[in-house]
Length: 205
Ligand code: SIN
Ligand code: FE2
Image (cartoon, rainbow, N blue to C red; front, side):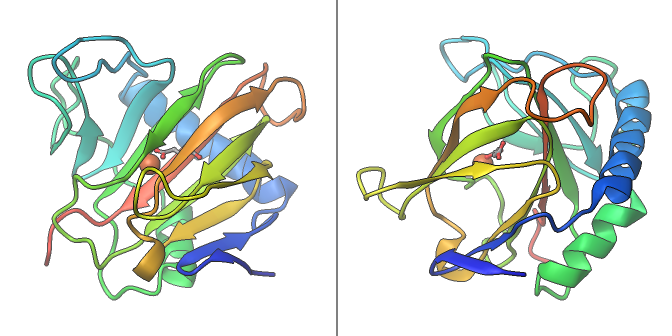
């Protein structure tokens, strides 16, 4: 099932069933073993974000005080290349991404019970024709999306484990964020918290 939340914002509730969600968690555990979660910091201020991050893919999205928002080929702490994107996620992209080239980056965000993410646009990619494909795992969250101006009206939906959102076309530059986590609403993970995966195409070709 697919619901259109707004032009270009497609919502696939429970796209992944319980067995597939568990397999995805195993895929991500393997990624995190090679590329540990780290604490990202905001450009200029160096203020720490509340989520913990890592990536898989030939490129990963990183942010720190000195370098700001960017994509790079290596983990900022280990300096090693990111692990590759799990096959299951490449298949998801091919299924729902509606784009001829494969994703280059998969940002992994881990939300503890109190973590959130402020309203923002994903605009560090050169290729804005490609969608951003997002997967939710673990505890539910309150997800907010709006238009392409920060002050546009927003709508909030509760995203649950297995849900997929695609920001593409007119929705690609939509502001979005996570206002809160609902701890203990899923038993998928070993403890509370939420994992979000976002697949992105970074370069133009
Ligand atoms: C993001 O915008 O990078 C994360 C969105 C989410 O956690 O659902
Ligand atoms: Fe985002």
